[in-house]
Length: 77
Image 1 (cartoon, rainbow, N blue to C red):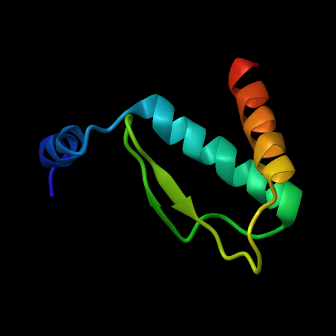
Image 2 (tube, rainbow, N blue to C red):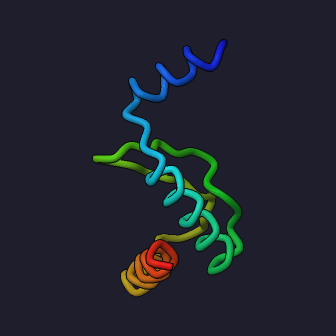
Image 3 (cartoon, rainbow, N blue to C red):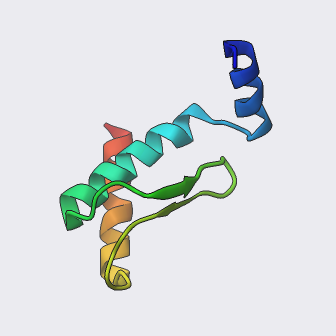
């Protein structure tokens, strides 16, 4: 696959560099907070994204809020 074909695929998936960066920040936040490793599966688009982690329980609402705060703080730096 040449570079031009790769760029076409990215644009077809609505590739967004800022969302890609946010994925890296989220992964690092999860690793630091829970030592759970990086996401094993993800789907990143501007309108809707998901990252899946190996985790043995559901996150609490407080943990979700803390993750959001830490990710947003890193983005603002």
